[in-house]
Image (cartoon, rainbow, N blue to C red; front, side, top):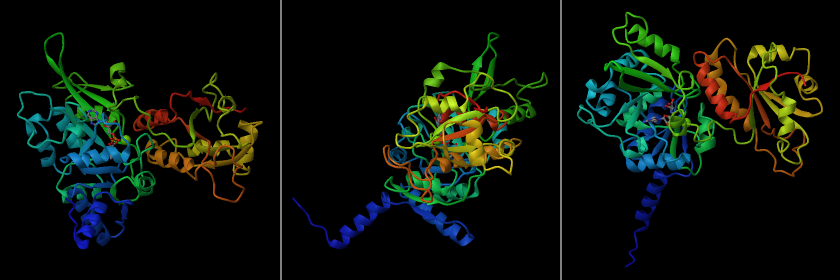
Length: 462
Ligand code: TXA
Ligand code: MG
């Protein structure tokens, strides 16, 4: 039997549906204390109603939802187009929230984690806790299965961004939050990046605008295992699965200071193993989780990322040059575009060395590096100082997005946009390799993934 609802009820239902899955995410400002508190209240109520809110953290923007709600967590995967086998990090704002999620509570937190929490929380460090049956009683509260994507463990972190902490406290919920980008795209470090990827038609209720993220690469993901050696003694192993905002060196010195690692004086010897630095594992590489190469990552939509080295000095002899690379990708630029648009992400020092102030960079670049290949335009996004990996980390994703998306590329076969009209994204982003120490390791892991499996290119004169 068909029942007809009063128009006011229909209207209310429509509004509710809009609230649950709005077409366009509201961008909530936080630039004054009054704006911040009303925006936080709005965002918290959306989360409590089971909706999605993108929020700033010190690393990158996260797409948050209640980790205790099946439908809210399902909506995260749908919004991002994220494969269902890639688990999410749970964000907490207090020690109590952590303790409630860990089997055995305080007693379930290993000594190595206690030391890392003391030193790096709140901050860019995610810790993986096993939920496998053990002598510990089960956790007081459990995140829904989809957060863990079938894994017998849960990753937890306490972000240091004041807006993130405030939002989690106001909502009173642990928040599952992956980076707030479409799956496979570079992570967002500005509210505009989130709006570009998820702002329309993706069911995101709001984007809390906290300006630029200061760290710029995601948290370090750490796992902990106990294993017994040949002598039958159990030893712990701290594994860095994903390099991130806290460096492997910082983790090692924290554990050493706590007497848990290094030196004969250490009261307990915990090994620190860094994926790709100290160990590789085909089995782990095949998994979708942290070190996984299973899915495409950090890829611009239009441009091809090419890693370059040897901007100064003669390192890299024997590697292909830019001319070789561009010649081997004749399909890019697309048919109909006779000239190459090149985007540079070089350190300040390399840029200054390549382009003396007295020269026109585009003309010089073409003459020296791409002879025979007209360079229509050269765009640059500084990769910061070569002496400061933290600056390169902060600029990495924003640079990739900026150079990639100045506008969509014209369709193949179309005449290129006439000079003076909107600027197109570049065909090639030449990204300089930086030293892999400290947060430089995290930067280079992301840079390599953005470049796919392609070779590093020697930046030598053509
Ligand atoms: O800095 C960050 O970590 C950001 C902000 C928003 O907090 N979040 C973030 O989330 O980068 P996402 O989903 O983009 O990356 C989380 C990583 C994934 O590689 C996932 O496989 C891994 O953490 N992960 C999550 N839970 C895991 C678990 N139980 N075991 C192993 N890896 C896990
Ligand atoms: Mg991500």
